[in-house]
Length: 166
Image (tube, rainbow, N blue to C red; front, side, top):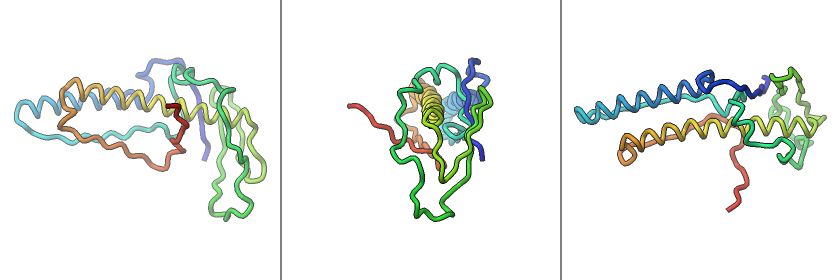
C-alpha cells in the first residue's frame, strides 16, 4: 500500500467528502420534513473517506499547519524484537511533486518526510472535522439536536491523539 497526499487549490465540491457532506445535509433536511409532517423517524448513514489515505485535501486545510513546526516520533524504527507479522510495508507518495519514500523496518524516513506525512494527516483530520461541523450545524439549524443520536465510527485510522493546550 502507498500513503498518498496532496493539497489542491480547488473548490470543495471537487472533493468526495464535501459532496457526501452536502448530500447528508440534504438528507437531514428531508428527514426533518418527514418528522415534522408525519412524525416519521429516520436513519441516515454517511461513509466519509477522510482522514484515511489518500490525504487529498483543499489547500486551505493544508495551510492550517507549518511542516517545519510538526514534531516527529522520538523512536524512528520499530522495536528490534517486533514480530514480523506486525510490519506492513508501505510507501509514502507526495502526489504534488511525485516523490516516493519506501518504508523500511531498518531505515527511518527522513525527518522532513515524517513531518510532511503528519502534516498531510493533520490537514486531513481538519478537513473531516469541517465536514462533521457542517452536518452538526445543520442538525442544530433544523432543531433536531435533542432528538438525534450521532455516532462517529472509524476504521483503524492513524492516531488521533494530539497534545491539547488547555
